[in-house]
Amino acid sequence: MTNDPRFLTTSEVIEIHDQEIATAVGLSGVRDIKALESALGAPQASFGGQFIMDIFEMAATYINSIALNHPFLDGNKRTALATSLTFLFINGFEIDEHYDVELAEKTLDLVARKITKSDLAQHLKSRSKEIR
Picture 1: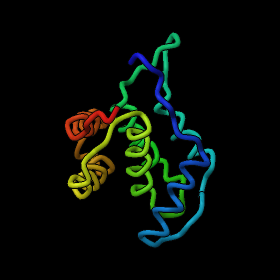
Picture 2: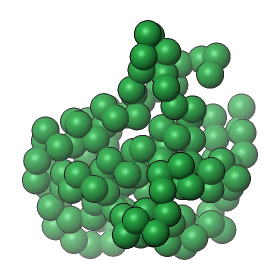
Picture 3: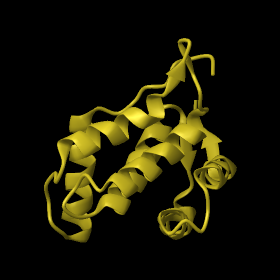
Picture 4: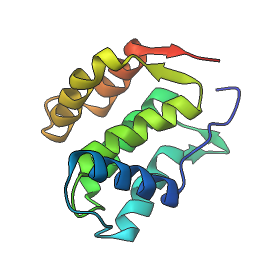
């Protein structure tokens, strides 16, 4: 990756969560701030100053980490997917909205361990288009 990606902040992800809860209803609020911070740090993994994942693996890691860490009282999977899509968008990639239901199903498959994080990253890559 030639440019370092822009990662989402804790407050940005809490805002995404609040929007998801307002749209689809549910309990608002953070259950465990440390779990959220841990989930948000996972996509930033590096070794020797180099990121160890590409942008799509990072996006899949957001989904995996938020959905499995359950940092929110409700809406963890919805927030995980929305965070991942926001991350891709702010880094120059967009996924066609025709794939919303499919992506929700892939998120559930990941949580149920029917697919791997690598499978999800490949799926995100196959459905993405560069927007800049």
